[in-house]
Length: 290
Ligand SMILES: Nc1ncnc2c1ncn2[C@@H]1O[C@H](COP(=O)(O)OP(=O)(O)OP(=O)(O)O)[C@@H](O)[C@H]1O
Image (cartoon, rainbow, N blue to C red):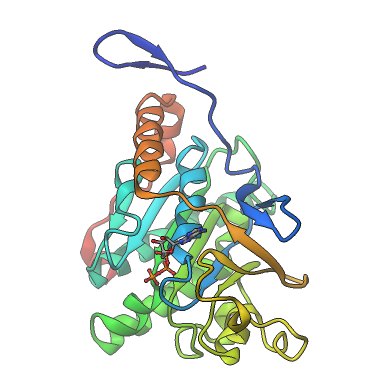
C-alpha cells in the first residue's frame, strides 16, 4: 500500500491498476463487461463529431493514469479533451505542431534505444517489471496534426513519425491510442489503419468511413458504424485484429469524474516509488529533433 504525505499527516492510498491488465471500456451487447488488453497493442478510435470518441479515450487514459507501471504522453489539439490528465502526464502537447514533432521524435529515439537493449539481451518484447516501462501515447484528433496545423512538410513528418510509433512501438511498450473525427483515407490510410490491433468505430456519417476505421469489407458483411443511432453516443463497433466487429457501449466518465480520478492518480504518482523515476523520457535539445 502506498502512503501519501498530504502535509496534514500520512494517508494510505488505495490499490492501483496495471497497464498489463486489460482495460475496461464498457459493455457488450449482452451487457457483459468489455475489457481490451492494450499492452503490445494500439487502438484507433474513429467516428463523427459527438459520437463518443473522447469518452473512450478518456476511459483508456484513466486506466493508464491509475497504472503506476505506465507513463502518459498526451497530444490534444483541442487541449480540453485530455487536459484534465495533464497533471498525471509526463508530456502534454496542445496546439503546437513543432512540439508534437519533437515529442514523437523523442519517442522514436526511445524506441530505438529499447530495441538496442532487447537485441543485446536476446529478447523480443517488454515484460512486467522490465527495466523500461510502458507508455501510453494518447492523441486526440490525428487530423489536427496531420492535416490542419503547420505546413505540408510538418504535417507529413507528423504522419510518418506517428506511423513509425504505431508500427514499432508495440514490442517495446509504447501504446498508441489515437482518435479522429475525420475517418477518411487521407487521414487514416490503410497502411496506418492496419497497424492498429484494436479499432473502434463510433457512429460514422457513411459506410465508407466505417470501412476506413474497421477495415475494408465489413460494410459488405453487414457491419457498418453508419447504422448506429446519432442519439446513442458511446455506442460503436469494436474490432480486434483477425477478429469480427462487436457492438459495445463505452463507459462514460463525465468531467467531474475525470477530474476526481486525475487528482487521485496525480497523488498516487507523486507518491510512487523512486524506481519509476529512472524510466522518464529524457529531454533533448529541440534542434536535434527538427
Ligand atoms: N458512452 C457514453 N454514454 C453516454 N453519453 C455519452 C457517451 N459518450 C459520449 N456521450 C455524450 O456525447 C457527448 C459527446 O461525446 P464525446 O465528446 O466523447 O464525442 P466525440 O466523438 O469525442 O466528439 P468530438 O469529435 O466533437 O470531440 C458527451 O458530451 C456526452 O454527453
